[in-house]
Figure (cartoon, helix red, strand yellow):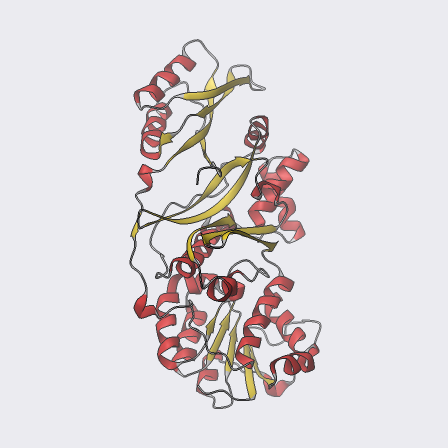
Length: 435
């Protein structure tokens, strides 16, 4: 598709984000046109519920019932997909748009995570844009930074807080001293958590995001096969308070790095030092750390979700197209994508936090320490506190460095003991001084 100075846009999906994008483009049309030295029109709108009250009106002639028909229209140059979800209409629209030489802008992380490899090939082949800044980090321009500003660097490590819902919950548990269920309910009332927050709480949301960032950083295909993904459902007020006693904070992190020419990628809660940069990121904020040579370490921070930040990123992508830019979706030719093996996470080494609810009786502690010792796990710190029911106690252990595989085997054996009252809580401790 050659450069032109006038573009016709179709917006598909008119929920909170779609509505905000539409209003922003209408309100700021002249400014955007002046900045891009081009003109544009919102030609068509497609949404599930045309009659839904949105607080603004859309001319009837703009409405299109079947969004897939847009890809065949000669008077559509750019499609903005804001439906969401990895499959269904969103998938069909994305593939059809690129195959029919339409530029595609999307905020759909699930779509890019699952189908980004194939979509990138089509976009490259047809010389059209596939842009997805809004899929990761809300208003944080992390994707454009990696593709453009950091292009002269060899990047080897990216990690951070990539989900505002879970960070809000963990922050509020610490601040209010309320339990997980109470904070989740409040987060839903405030709009920080979905009615069904499963994808946020179980780590899947971060899984999609860190995979996209990893591909960009390491110039590889998106890793969308299984890798370690854990959420925060098992964490409660007790863990937050014990972490604080040991001078840690709990954060859900997405982490990807290159070690010995292998990709070590995972999502899980971490205990991090209270003095670290990430420990200071509270509420619904995100923070992303990128490390490379020669740049060193760079920190990106901001709101990771919401209609304002997401709209900012969508409009940024749109501006790039209006300026006549055609960029490679991931910043490199997909035919040149590097092939990395996955790091065997059983060989991961770190310290571990364990909270074990046990029957408070003689011999329990010695039995647990004996099992840990058999699997070459030594103890750095230990704390035992009785529960409201005097028959039970919390046994909190901080281990020395140990192998992931050894810890899993040890916990499996400990869990079978009759004195264990509840599922053991295990959180990895991240040492940012020795990454």
